[in-house]
Amino acid sequence: SRHGLSMTAVAGEGTGMERDYDYDYRTFFEDMEAPADIGRRAGERAVRRLNPQKITTRTTNVLYESRAAKSLLGHFAGAVNGASVARKSSFLREKMGEQIFAPGISIVDDPFKPRGAATRPFDGEGTGADRLQMIENGILNHWFLDGASARELGLEPNGRAHRGGSGTSPGATNLTLSPGDKSPEDIMKEVGEGLWVTDLIGHGVNGVTGDYSRGAAGFWFENGEPVQAVSEITIAGNLNDMFARMVPADDLDARYSVASPSILIEGLALAGD
Image 1 (cartoon, rainbow, N blue to C red):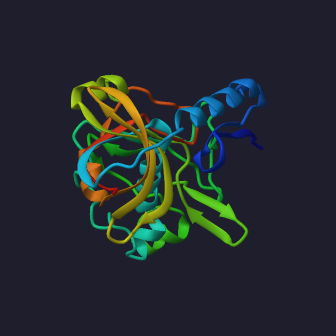
Image 2: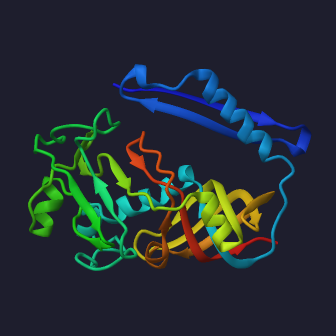
C-alpha cells in the first residue's frame, strides 16, 4: 500500500497565469509531510514563476533541480532495463563494463532501503533481490533482469521483476544517485550563468540512440543568483554525452524510489527565440 498527497496551485490572472505543484508519497502514513507544508510550497513555486521571459537560442550550463534531475535517473533506468537490452533498443546495450559516467559517480539500486517506496525482499517472480551497485566510479556493472530477459541475455535474474496485469517486466527498486560535495548555490556561483531547470515537459528521448529533447521552464541565473523566470525552452543533447558530463550537487532528497540530487550539465544546447 501507498499513501500520497499532491497540490497544484495557479497564480496570476488571465493569460499571465502560471502553475506549479508539490507532493509527497510514502509507504507509511506517519512519514507523510503535513498537507499545509505541501500546499504552501506549491503556492510559492507557482508565484515565483510569474512573468516568465523567453531566452535566445544558445549553448549554456544547465542545472537540473533535484525534482527535475530524477528524470535523468529514470532515463538511465530505462536504458539498463534488461528487456530493452535484449531487444537491442537501448543506447547502452553494448556498454557493460565501460565508463559511461564521470569517475566518482555512483548509482545504487537497493531493495532493502529502510521504509523505502520500493523496498521488498524478493521480486514479482519470487526471486531474492540483492543490492546492486549499478554504477561504480562511473562504470556500468549491471542490467535490471527478470527471468525472461536474463534467459535472452544468457545471464541470471537479479530480482528486478515487476508484476503487472500482463505478466512481469524488469525494472528498478530504490534507485539512488549519490550526492556530490557542493550545494546547488555553490555550483551556480562557480559556473556563473545558465539555466536552472525546475520543470520539464514532454517525453522526447530516443531510447535507441540516446537523443534527448525536452521542453523546460525554470530560471536564468547570473553571478550565481536566479534573476528571471524563463519558459518555452527546449533542451537538446544526447544522453551518452550528458551522462559523461553530469556533476551531482549535495542536496539529495532520498525519500522516494528514484532519488537524485540536483545535477549540473555544462554545454547543453537550448532552443528559444
